[in-house]
Image (tube, rainbow, N blue to C red; front, side, top):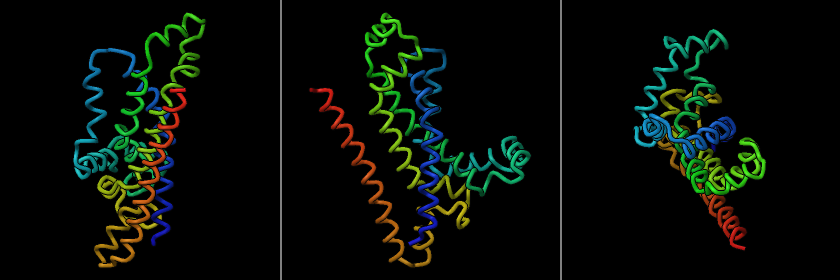
Length: 223
């Protein structure tokens, strides 16, 4: 069992969720409540990581983060290091390829909030911010929770994008998924089986948590 790779994957998943979910909430709310020119194109762009092969997305991110790119040069000037083949590089890549997993569930949750509820809050004297914080967000919480768990679980299992952007550096970019691939390549099926079972168990627990909490919320609203 490669505990270093597992710890790196858990850290990557946690930071991805922490950094992505707040931005996803604001973006999802905008898409749910407002019609604006180009809205369909924005939604298509956000959903693109679902359709692109991981190696294709990884190639474009590797090019965008490379030392000759604007992003790569800016990062090097600020941090004194390269963005590719680093933890910060795979974290940024993880945030990008997880956007649809974070935005779509939250957007659907905001869309399910009746307009009449928001209008009643405004008529009661609540500001837009108060309505969002005290009315909309609590009602959309199941979608936020789903997005949080999906983002975390999907990060743990991602292979192609992380390998393209970060390579396979122990302690820096080697995640549990890459470690499993390494063990298979080395014909160490026993270690690969253990790590795969751990990843399967974590994914199953994450999905079970979503359904359990959603069922509890549904029963609470039904009372």
